[in-house]
Length: 94
Length: 254
Image 1 (cartoon, one colour):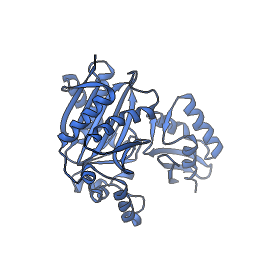
Image 2: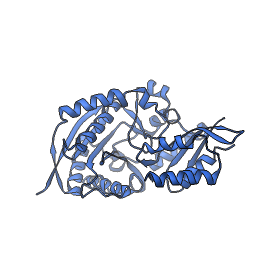
Image 3: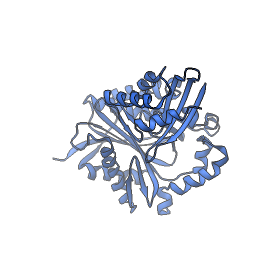
Image 4: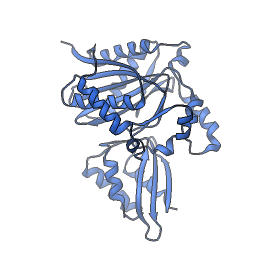
């Protein structure tokens, strides 16, 4: 199932998530994280999208995954953070 | 002795050429083949650039682009969609370890934007940096800026609006909700300004780029020496134009 969310991060940028998810297993089939934010290095967003594939659409699990990905890869976000990314993804859930 | 940087004035070019040149300078400077470089440029035809992470079809009406002969391109920098028409665009390319470049990305945005603010001061325009990446005059945006860092090198580019046609811009930009499009346009008109609007007079590209040049020289305490793209940079730019900014794969990446 294809869904989309638009989330304006308070005091930050806009995140638009395009999500293809399996509603039976509640898992992410594929995800695109788009918007007018900044992330360094830029390629990290592609890697994060890959890592999110197959994961449960569940808030705490997603936050832990995103947060540890950011720590491990020393990703620097401007205008977004792991909390707001998680929120944007969760808003895709119908 | 005052440090010397290179100044490039490359005139009006297509969106793909412009983005390819910025990237070519980034690569050449990261390899110590050219000095830190400030470039001033414009766009012909007018163009929309979208941020690296933006979804092309979600942001731009490609049919309208064709109809109004507006180019489109995906930047290597993040940030939002920008309509480039009557403006001066700058880019600065400088290695990350330069003493004037903060390791803190947001701080470095502020410092580089200071060069623009200083330049606008010579046009008697009192502007200030509005984090994350804007410069504002009386609360209204006059300049948007975007930075990337690759190969330990900073590329920041940005626009200084000379004039802006918000209605035209919205013929090309998609809005999330067509019903409130009129309201959105009114809102943007209230939040965006330009040199023409602020001073009630028309400046030439040269007048604006000249004051921006002084702004960079003073802010960074350097001399900007007129230069040209090297042959190697031209070749690089040509291949980037072909492989990236002029290609469907790149522009339709997401």
